[in-house]
Image (cartoon, rainbow, N blue to C red; front, side, top):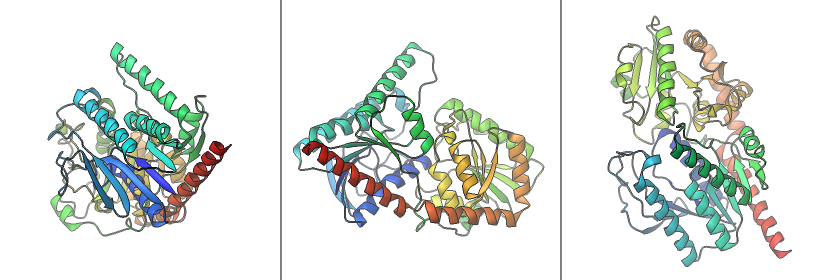
Length: 425
């Protein structure tokens, strides 16, 4: 089987903690398919680091082809500002860059000998999805849309924002209708799409997963413990997931209220883990709390070391409410690292934690309950060990990347066969 995957980003680019999970899913699925004997081609852009610089060994050429762990990767020119001094959603240069990626990729497929059996595109980026539809029409191949996240709408009430939301909704509805098949990561997300009464294509659920061969328990990195002066401290790790300023402010408020409740517990420290200052410029709010530390000086591929540093992984649902519908890849990473999880949310993520019996669930934004559970777990090492072992056992049995990739490949083969049969008929 020949697979064409359209992805705006692809390793070695890792441009954020949450993006890391999405890129891991795309790359590791492709790698598993290649290992199974399938031919995979990825059209993407040039890889960059978090500071905007290109990765060593790459030049921002119009076209660059390479073999990346058996995957044929075709990289196209990309606009890279040295510093992101503008918001992506409002930047002419950013949207111009997306248009150039769209144009170059379409011309590339039209001119080169690329004849896949299926075309896959990520739905999180409208430009990618439109490109996928155009290429699938050009090559007469089925289009599979990966819907892995909740579409974000502008919270502004301006006329411009309303028109933007209306346009985005219409384009999304069009793409969902035109797709040959839709793949989501959770059943609730599939139901959300299906309940819109707009989708005629079949929807399948291919859950998130984790590569247990690379994520497993390790000792706390001594250099980070010394750097943050965390010796003999019980560490609660939290990675913010906000996608706008309002959500970021709400996350900080809840986090600091929990810190206030735990201020009398000298052994407990709350670690705010972030790789960007986009939403955390007001660090002065953290300075008033002796039991709060900010950690952002880590390398991009250090997710294993990040989770090994903490004793408890904290997840808080904000107004984004995406934890109700999707399961973040960070949840699976914590489970694979044998870390107990405390989640303040309901829905899909809470059901996973309950099913795996790997953590504690409290009502959304209930800071008193969060503080009580943290205090109890900090004095219950055996309980923490049991919860962590339960989580690791669950992902090794049900959420291994190789197992999920095999299910995905079988689905793609069925779609390709059905498409060929319908064309012959």
